[in-house]
Length: 160
Image 1 (tube, rainbow, N blue to C red):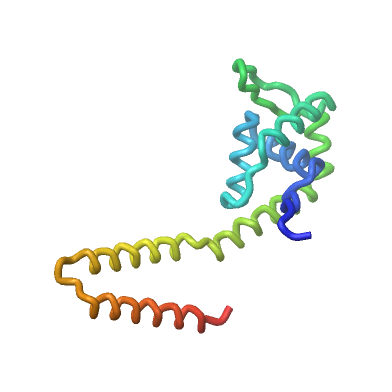
Image 2: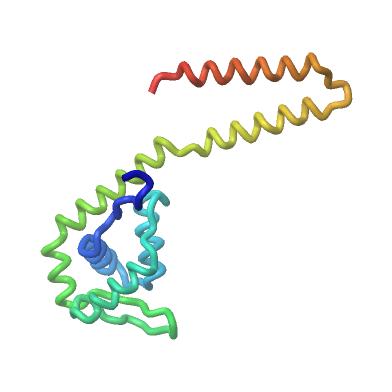
């Protein structure tokens, strides 16, 4: 079965362990937690509000976290004494999750196509600049096509 949904980066239990470890560091809003987890992955993954907010509600109802400040729609959460004890029990698990998220960031860094996108855009600009000049001829078009074909052959020969 191809084309299905990707495996979740974090299951609900893992997300709660990670959230609790982040709340030990400092009180945070749900949105702050989402952005912090995204930062841990180098932008590769950000949990949706649809999984973070229910996790926060469950953790609050379980006594692991409490509202630190309530600014209308934005509630800041902090760990309760029970939550701090649980975080201590799960410290090794939280560290493993952080390492797993850091590995996602490392993989993204290695395979980030941003330099390639930049180079393709520069190539596109150069080609259209040359072809839009008044003195561009059929010979220029063929020279550009040859250069592009040569670049394609070089890329195809790169071993990965």
